[in-house]
Image (tube, rainbow, N blue to C red):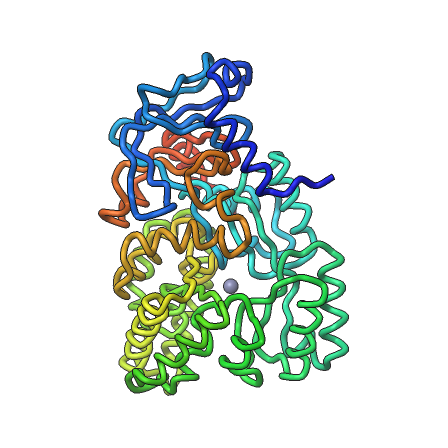
Length: 444
Ligand SMILES: [Zn+2]
């Protein structure tokens, strides 16, 4: 029998309140963050002087340090001067390419976790990923929890409604969590996909095919629009400034239909050529990627920005428009979900989150709104409110310990003292040691 998550949470919450300290003492796997400031993300607040006990992969108890008994034998982590936040979600990540070695997979997953990313919505499926998802779930492979989009729906794979219907049924049966929409799907096939997805109970998300258009995709029920795909086109803002009235309309439509938005600001600026290549090449985290991968990214960027008709000023205008669009969507109550698209050009798994957070700041979003987009919003989006995305009794033990308050400075997300993923604690020292080994290679 499957026990509903809400019941599990209710049981765990009750346990946290009622159980005497001795009940916790019997379990051997306890970890306690002692005297830490909790950033629960259930509201915009911090709670200083707390002790957080983790057991069996869950937050078992939270309370004032003087009142919480740490179970004997528990691993104690000094929380003085530290801030405990929920594990972070990457809502547009990727698995390493098909045919990658086990080592490449393990290294990629580690880069995510090493930066506090404990959940990845992997946005393009291929054979073998479901097995990886299950290995991570069982604790046999260290990595972020995976939520998997299946193989792409695009102009090549889906030409007719019948293709779409079959593909939805197959992917649901195979155990994918989500359908990935790419450009090129004809409108009739898209509509058939949407109907069948509703019938069998699976979401669809990603790009907006040109034949479908943004307004129709939103109205049909596409769960997320990634990269702000279609917004600039819909607004006619690919060259000049954004029309404020039109923007307000599309914000209302997006919110009204409950579509989420995964902005991927930094990656898109790379794709449109709004960065300077020298800035991209100076990213310190490139040392964690194979040199030939970085060489490929560089030549792609040079090709795009060297093409005839490329206009750097126009690219920067589009980038500025995208920031206005994101700000309007966020202010208008649209569900913003944090994502960077990694690994992808100059977007190194895990490390890319810190750059994306700064880009969201530059768009005018508050520190709390940015952190919510990577925590509680994601939990609500995938139907796990109270279960993930907050630090509350009964929530999953996916946690990040910071050296500064992220609600005061989002840059503090990069100052990590350790990460707990699926109940397993990785200290800063252990993380740095492995990162140094990754930078040293060889893995080309
Ligand atoms: Zn992607």
